Length: 329
Image (cartoon, rainbow, N blue to C red; front, top):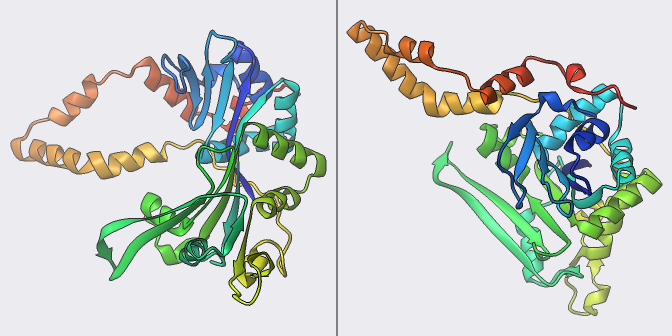
């Protein structure tokens, strides 16, 4: 299990306290921007780690780590010799209010067949507290390697509620994002429990109390959802648990553990954008320079000026994790 989304609000306007005492990162390495999200007026960023701030105490300071942000923060936790549990404890001690927590379970063998689970929802073979489900199928209009490239996603529960489930084909996402062939993807499917506000808080409290991610995750799953096989000779409540679902929730498999996958802050996404969007045009311009015996591209680069924002990004990229963390305990 991985943490794949963390959002915590702190009832303070002291952004330095949150960054240096709770995240234990040096504020001087963060990029400051005069705009924010969610009605916040400004924010600080270190790669995919975002800290939004406001002069209004009721908004306070908001820390947001999406998927890549969680992986990046894990590289700093590793340098700090601190665990996610210790970070959550520090956040709660600092009066942090949990706003969102996503628990992600990776299915590496393809046990979760999303089209089949979707059909079970349609056939009322999903017994759930939730009253709604939505399924999406996204893909390309062209065929690659003679195989149709499609991805299936199943949401169970309302996206506006404080808890819902999202099951999607991670291999397709990796194909779209990183051009990794679907058959080579390490993770086939992902099951995400998305928790907000009070539900997120109680999940963190449960994790801290039991230090058992399997207990926490599947207590939530079993409370809200189970897939069964239809049997018209019995009442729906007595239908047998689906065999694949039983395996997923714990029958005859290894115990689920909390794992991390630290990924240092990287400039790779920008380089990918340069490679796909800019490089072809740049190559045309360089070729024209060669044909015309000019140096337009060189002149452009020579006259390009780095802004304070660019200089801060260079600063972020030129240091190691150990340089960015504080020494506070």
